[in-house]
Image (cartoon, rainbow, N blue to C red; front, top):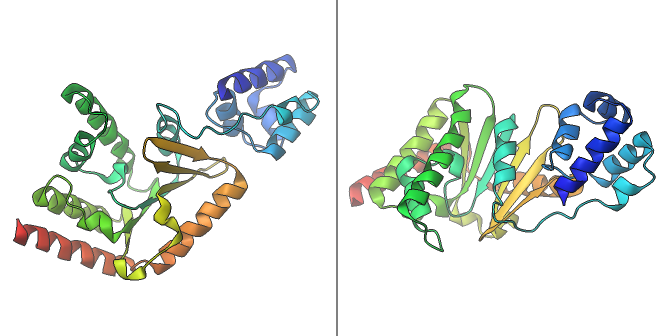
Length: 264
């Protein structure tokens, strides 16, 4: 539905003789935002749609036929993955697993191998390559800024064995030592907090509004409604305020590595 919406917007823009930049300027938006809408990757807010209707003289068509946000699609993560490559700041929250962007190869393989329904080894390898390629954005020493807010369960859940977990925790420590990622751990002692419902990623961009991505079992949703994104950012900030500071979080990671190595 968003693809059809985007195609129609493009047709009306071109019929009006406007470039994406000219339409963006007239509607008080950014060119990249217009491009994402036309490509079907984003759904405009009601206010954006109203301004587009006004500039393109389309009555209230764009406002009235806004696509509904999908609760789940087969390739539910693809849109979020594309946004991840464009973001200048990514803030992750993980409840039970290390975020995919920060996973080591062996940890990622263990996660993918536990998928249901099961996939072939070849399919698992393809997904593993895709997951590891995402981490290429960390090759840039500055952008994107990445924060990882981890529930203590992420460190305690033995994924792939104790050796794999030690290696994964050491990888997180190295990323922090290189000042590439900030890691904050929410210890069990914090008790209940709002983000316990699931995994969350907040993404900020240089020239377009921020988005949020939430994920559950076989369900992933990109949120670009300003009200929803603001609410999710608030929940993230509250949870972060309860987390351990960076130094204490790294100390917990180091202790966890020693525990896995000793028990292993």
